[in-house]
Amino acid sequence: MNTLNMFLLQAAQPQQQGGGYSGLIMIVLIFVVFWLFFIRPQNKKQKEEQKFREALQKGDDVVTIGGIHGKIVDVKETTVLVSIDSNVKIEVEKSAIVAAPAARK
Image 1 (tube, helix red, strand yellow):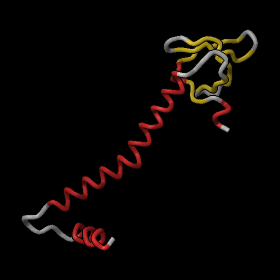
Image 2: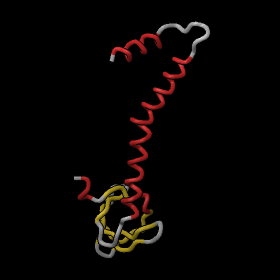
Image 3: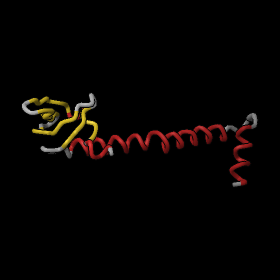
């Protein structure tokens, strides 16, 4: 831990001519932190949502991004037919399906 504190103190000091690696190292460290805490979790979440949408089946209860609750009647390549009431069906893009009600509890 002591070497980390020493490194941070050296990075905070004004740069002398001839040495500029500490600034480059700090930029790399900032990028790594952004990747670990922002980019990587977002990519993981997108992959999970894609898997969920690909696994949609007839009979699944779903919620759309507009808040409409219904049951899937038919699954097509990019859309699903959702029954929201007796004799009321709407065709919705798969990307507009956000969750199954049971998964949100």
